[in-house]
Image 1: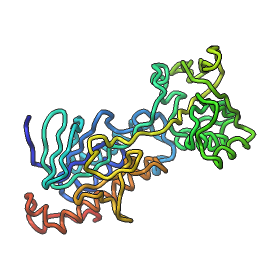
Image 2: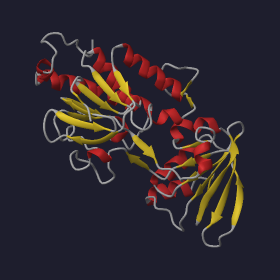
Image 3: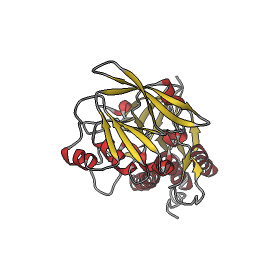
Image 4: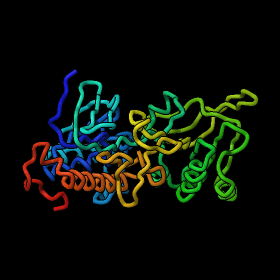
Length: 330
């Protein structure tokens, strides 16, 4: 397998965090390589209309927004490659990043590989993503004004999503596979006391009905106690059964919490437990999970990486003559 040492920073992930980091790094002449992974552009590529990203008063399609971010970073010299990270070695410097195509040695790494929304796993669910099936109430709730929608899940996230959606929807039905919710009592009480929210327990979704042209029209559901299968009319499905951070290749080297999110030990810094390795976006954020917050943290990671590289004079040793670095915030 070929080995390359031509880049100063490797950015893992090409969502809003990764693209923003690449933009700032490339403007600083730090020669970033963006490894796009399995889902180039991140979760926004499965989102249709994005109306809450600043600068687009009429809204913009998720894939289009990510294409523009990529073009902007490429304009300043960022290199994008559709490669999947298989393993890393952060135990010695320079770091080693192994992809499905080649091996890289690099002085700094920014991890922006995001998190993946957990799915039910239905073919019909996948087919209607962005056409009535959503994984983010904050992102898509506005499109369901005065509609009847379903939330699948029983944890805090599901209760939070259901409660938020009542701001727009006429009715929200929570479907949960067990007899009791897993959410905290305060979140359960908040949802149960909301007159717009109803609950269906001991039930799973077996099929999402509808089409890309007409959107979601209903669900085929099965009662786990009786085995009875029935159809439920709905105009939207929000799946809220959790997210999985895409951090598996770094396990055992980067400190993570019990859910796999990367821990940042220093306040107001994107540095990880390893100097020279930074993290941004949804790999560290299980609270907001928005494109704008991911982009902001991508900027922070690039600033932190540039300052670390300059302070350690690593850019000079790696082939950038002293004084040639453009200030990243200029």
